[in-house]
Image (cartoon, rainbow over all chains, first blue to last red; front, side, top):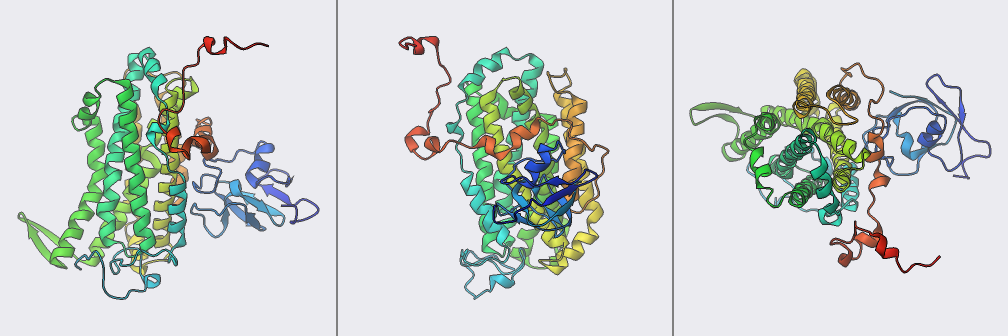
Length: 90
Length: 376
């Protein structure tokens, strides 16, 4: 994950102020560290409980996601940002 | 179209639809029309577990300490889950395999059903430990009205599809009279039945297990029946994967990424499909009322359980393009997530790789004497 960037990407979610991505953490872990409530079950990309809308930016998956997600959705439990991202939880 | 176990014509499976194309011939997985099913097979196999790996002997002592209300909740849930897995251990095979046209989907359905049979075996494992003779529990499943009502709703769509498929594969399209009853059989009708059946299975995997899961984990929160809870955690992990597969199938149809006629049917049967989901939610809520008819258990009551069902129903309806129906935005049982988290159910490799470790490898009893010769 260190090859992504020198300065951390920003993660914006709902109405919260932007959070900095923390190295070696998934998007879900970053959100949890700021007490943002995101639903989850498996944390491995196969159940889809954490399905979230990606409004802006790109992510890279650390585990191949198995759950069904739409083209404009991501699974925060198994991805890291590869640019600044903007998310909207359901 | 007559079913054949080995279709001797060359078929390009990359151009076949998921269902109602040519029967599958070569079981090959080097190429896949829908690669997600291959990935699901691999994931499911990596989850392999055996009920005997989990020591449930301590549960027998816990069970004796439960109140009558709690015993009713515990045993009723096991009965209901036994029913669900009895249906799921056979029905996807019988209903879907004769009409599947992709090798990866065929093997996924077989793998899926096989795991449901492991779940069924685990209920016997749990009950054998609680009762010297668990027959009365199993025998009640086909007599108990509360369970029977659910059974008929769950098996109805499967039975309907299976019967129509049998007529189509033996008699072909047309109007057939069987026992004085007329049946209109054509491909469009069959596809409609398949669509409704898949929605019913999806609702089953999405909703129907969760009232009993919540009760099991509520016992475990009080450090009761923990062997049972460990087994149910493994089952919940599998069911999550099964749900993912039905969500993929439905979405491939709805979004026109498979059989274009199925996209039309999805549109046409939208209201009916939604009704199937809503009925499953209502039935689960009624089940919660039945469980708590004699009183609640610590940490859980009927209302909070119903809210939890509505909460997950909203999410699971949204995945298949239905608008969320219920007014619950926060998870009323946040501790459930700890039990549904896949890392927390991992079986230690040294316990699962060496076969001799498999049977009763965990000793639940550690007495103070064991440390008698320890010097500090």
